Image 1 (tube, rainbow, N blue to C red):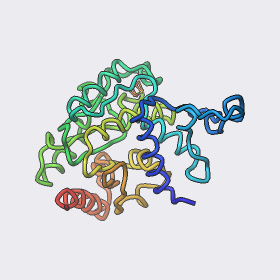
Image 2 (spheres, protein in one colour):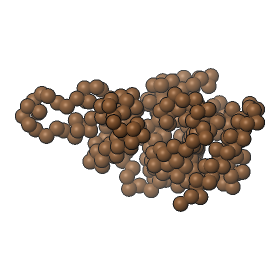
Image 3 (cartoon, helix red, strand yellow):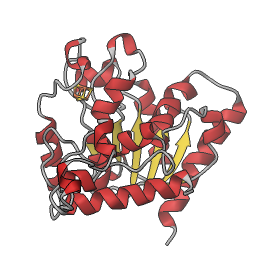
Image 4 (cartoon, helix red, strand yellow):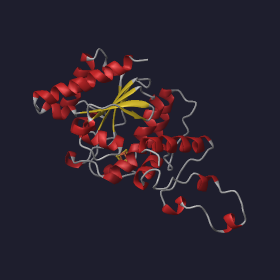
Length: 273
Ligand code: SF4
């Protein structure tokens, strides 16, 4: 049996192959996970591309994870191919696809605007948070409130400028009363984040806080177990750490030191070959 990380890599490779062939969508319907036994198979005909692009069985990777990965690689509703575009063009295409998005219920729950992401399209370092808060919803820019100001200061302490990095969230609309995003909202929105990451191709991604780390790594492990580790993820090195909003709450000195150590590790990885 493949390790989950190996299986994910193999699955991603498999799906990219079919994306190159022009397959633009996959179904999470279990019916697609089964080879046809009907007319085509009985006639010995080659399966269609859609059937060949079925998800691997549960022995390779869990069904939930496979569906989520599939959705993350393909936005069946409106994906503009971005292969061959430079990162800035690709981001523009993705934002155009997103449009005035109404794909999940958050569009009708009080958002002012979509918060797409901000920064350099060729950033080598990317930060991913949970969702826009009140300030971000008003300004249309991620991490501009008090937590964002702390993040900006941290970036500057690392010897970088905010405009050198790229900053985004797992979901792009503010949940009402800053509640946690719900699973259907994440499943619907995160394909756009993954497309942004694939366009930018950062060397290092820092997941800010429990929610972002769990969503990106598809785990329920608490941040206390995830931080301090470096994950190979989507062609980048992923470092989970505490959310700046948590650090603003004056946590114990040890946790503030751990966070700074995570940020310094991210900086050091940028300088590695
Ligand atoms: S959270 Fe994402 S999927 Fe939902 S409406 Fe906003 S942009 Fe669309």
